[in-house]
Each structure stands twice: as structure tokens, then as C-alpha cells.
Image (cartoon, rainbow, N blue to C red):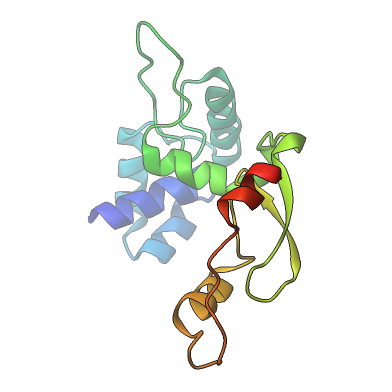
Length: 159
């Protein structure tokens, strides 16, 4: 059994999938899948297992992303994730839970296309997109215009 197959078995089992369905997806026998699940604490009824895993995740005993057991440190902050990869994956899937400050939104005008855009957390941003930055930085000669130089020192002090 490969590491990828083991990860597939774990993920499918945590979703509440039965041994036979996992075996057909992974390409192993039902007995191999069942033995792997028993040896890694994933045995029992699939519906009960998912409820137990959710309880463990809420108590901080299992990773919020993959469900692996977490050994909590003796001192310091309690861990929620087993690795940095799981932490990044969870936060990218839960963007709506980020607490963004309303004072960190800046309304700007793009230096290239002159469209209005909102920048979060960067008051020095000049372009609405990477494409505008590239066009302004590298293609100004082809377009027959002067490059964007930025405000002078006296203009920065006045604003």
C-alpha cells in the first residue's frame, strides 16, 4: 500500500465511506482497507466514526483539516492543525472566517488603467492587478507613453 492510498483511505473513511466503497476507489481489497482502518483507529460504523472525529476536532484532539491525532504541547497555545500544510489548506477554504479590520481597506486608482479598486492592508499599492503592473513596467515604450514614476516627495508629504 502506498502513502497516497493510505491518505485516500483515511480521507474517505473520515467522510463516512464504507470499506467496500473505499476498496473500489483505491484499488485494494476490502480486507486490506478494513485492516488498515482497524490499525489506525478508523474502524466501526462510518456514521459513528464521523461524529466521533468531529467531536475530537472540536476538543482539539484531532487536526481540523485531515483528522489526524494531535499531541498537544505541555505549555503554550493549543494546536489545531497537525502541520503548516493543513493550516494553510484550512484557512484557504475558510476565507469568510478571517477577521478583517474595516480601517485596513484603501480605495485607490490604478496607475495604469485608472480604474478605482480597493486594496486591503496595503496603502502603497499602485496597480489594480499584476497584469496592469506588467503592462506599465515593461511595455510603456511599445505603447508610446512615459513610464509611471510615482508622486514626488512634496506630493507625498501633502497627502
